[in-house]
Length: 452
Image 1: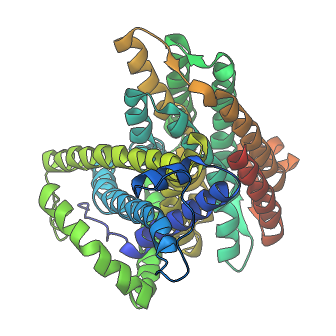
Image 2: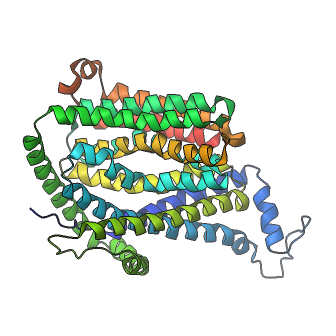
């Protein structure tokens, strides 16, 4: 059967993503500013032409101080809103549908497609943020974003999926073990490399090699199994997933919030539709060349928007007095992961709990291996020197330790000893009780990592 375009997700998810990022960012920034950071206050005074020794205006005059103080925060929140709204739309409605058809065109199985092209599409914001940050020497923001994204993926998304369904989620143990163990191995190497604060060519190459080792763990079992049965099962799962997503999207469309964000996203969607060529939705046999052109222009937009996201985070460190690691772990990490949260929730509600967890956890392997290693390796080769992690390397090591605590908690709850013994035949589940434990540890570790 000829492939056809999947119905693009409604802008509600992208809109809530942007709002959530803006709220988290504003709360963290105001908390840090209130705790004694004077850098933002000096910026605000200089921005409005005030001296350091200015006092409050007389009571008889109109007091516009509060509005003036909040204008920079509102400006940054609005910038974050539109940047992450645009990133979510270009990924969900243009890049991922084109990649999905390419996977169908080349008959890639679910596991292989998920670990290669689809994982790249899901991780594109993080990858290109780190690429831009490496080129600009701002890895002290992009690397905390990668680690913060992983805390959200392991500690927030699985519990959210467990709360979204009535019964405990039944999972196949092997995919969860494969993805999480691969990530822990990559994270351990990354932690070791940060010890000296510099990452050289050899260390960058090791991170890239880890991703290809991870691919072998997927490809080898696939080629040893029966392809025909697997493709039939994959087709049935994809059809069920599409129907479930359409039901959720229909409910979202009928809400006032959904209609509001639909209106807000129309100008952005209009610009993308005129600059990113996409096959018609009713096209039965879209051109392969056109699909690759769509991917190319989508990646161009993602590159530019990722650069803007870094600029927003950089401005946050100036206006709000935030640390670079805090801006990366909150603003950039949440903006990249919340779309995955809604995707996983749709799959969990549609009766695909395994796909929901794999969607969250699997993409983290490419983030820390290829997403960090490839830009660093290119920098090592082209510039002939190591990548300097900056003064924030110690904070990143601290965040990596807290992330490991979250992953170990995830293992204890989701992967009991029997799952490891059974291997590929093992089954496990995640209920609301276990989800509460994972979420509690994740919230504590995330707060400690941001406050470090």
